[in-house]
Length: 252
Image (cartoon, rainbow, N blue to C red; front, side):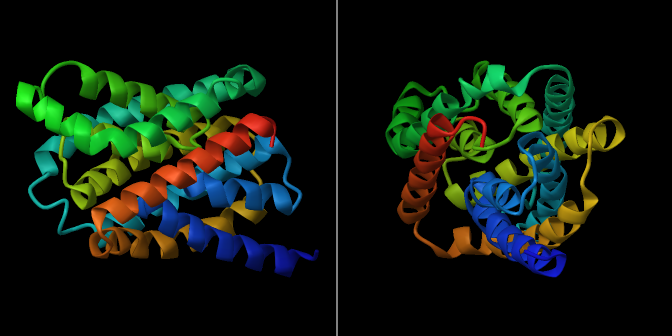
């Protein structure tokens, strides 16, 4: 495979990853295996994937202006929390063996996917008990998901989407838009740390990032158009597939 073909493949994979990720939250299901397929080693692929995913943030923001209307104060409150979590996750990635966390990741992704499927029932129960928007679930969950997003990221969008639906907004397109902004903030700080201190293969980052931006512009629009149940089941099933893949091939 020559360089031009590899770049074209990563551009296409990035577009699909950006669309799928900002529409629901499984960016790495497409982008991470694509990096491995063109011969990038596992750690370098993880670093490149996180840095390229920064491009999803502005793309999703442009496409989600309707859903994010009047959410400025909320985002100002919680975006810094996500950003700090992403930075801590990057520090862990650079200082700890990835094999230690690889054992837990599939179960976290599966738990987020199953929570997404159970969200309507869980939300109804919380509504009856009048516990929506209250308690420590939102800040605790956001710190955990942001830290994980900065560390590895595969499936973090599913976890964040489930968290938003359960604790902030039961409307899937709006919850998805908030998820994209928070995961974006975590990704940016993680990427900055990785650029400064980690090994970065810019030859694969650039085409992947360009593709991700293009896909991210479309993702929120897809979420807006498709029925919520279709999106919920599609994202959850992709998440479960990713969990199985990570369980069978933890180092891939």
